[in-house]
Figure (cartoon, rainbow, N blue to C red):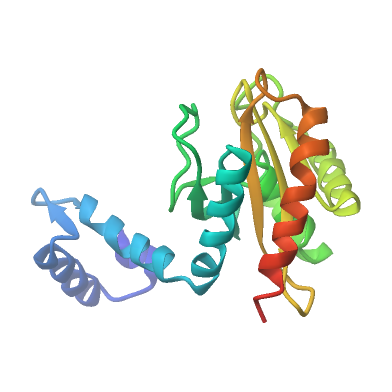
Length: 221
């Protein structure tokens, strides 16, 4: 099965799987190989060594301490967003976002600003293949409506997602642009809807997100 999916020969796949097993990254019950928790070290090593993450972390830590809210940096990977940095106060949040967390791009604020930055042909290809699932009663599940939301994010320069990923969770994100005006990531915050209104998020938090996204982008080629 692995040989068929990767295009590698059965012999090569067997050697690779045996090596992963020997190193403690996989296990075999005699017929089926499974990844072991140790594999997470590889992903975390990448995230923690990322220059983008290294530059962003002190910025997000500073604004998190000042605003007493959680802030995160994410990038687009296929149909998902992957979180490189997460900084926040010790507060219970129902969605457990941490370094390495991956979430659907279509129903996250960071995902939407990153989708909005894609060339039109790439977004059209994404829209054709993505499967929209209702995670809450508010989740956009019609592709024309999603396309309209992405266009709004493109025009506004930010995206707010109101309880589409999880009931009670409202998030806000802005793109991070390099000095050459290329969008490489998004900074976002997720807050319980009952605690902070959408109006307050736009008035109090959006300017902070924009200011610090600009600050981060100025440090990236």
